[in-house]
Length: 218
Image 1 (cartoon, rainbow, N blue to C red):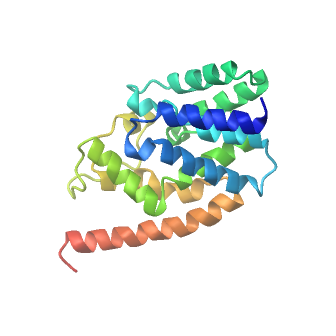
Image 2 (tube, rainbow, N blue to C red):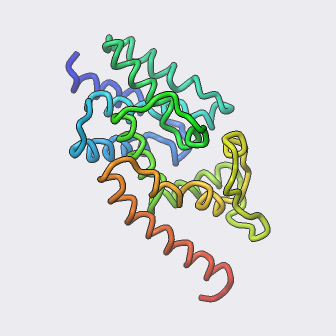
């Protein structure tokens, strides 16, 4: 199978697998991450096949929808790629990216794996978590989990552990401070940093407007 054929087969597999997914983690999220990854890759020395496959398969089984089980996604990705007769070194690289790229892993003092390909896919995924679409995804997931929009009596936890992050039930606005506003400074690539800067500013402006409306100031 050609690389193009493999990518098309992977797209079809992911699209079918995520047919009933929550709106912030559905096929369209994956497609945006894939497009972001290709854009960033234009300015990076990376194995494009690894980047594309990891971007397409990164949320094939997001742990938050599988009782926190972080092993299902890499396993599903690996099984699919094996059936496509993909080279074992590519499969290993892709699954390592999926296992290690998530924001929650940034709480670990040491990461067991890194590569330039992972940095590209990680930036691509994080870009979709900020800006206008990031805000929409944040509130969509908050609604999915029946969380409050905002509660001034519940302050963001700025020193949470990985376990606390995974278990949080805090109001949606808190997530801006606990994750979204942190991502700009965690970008790995020049392209990622450039795009993130604009999206970060949009979120800051949004929060100013949110609080003004909340407090009846305008």
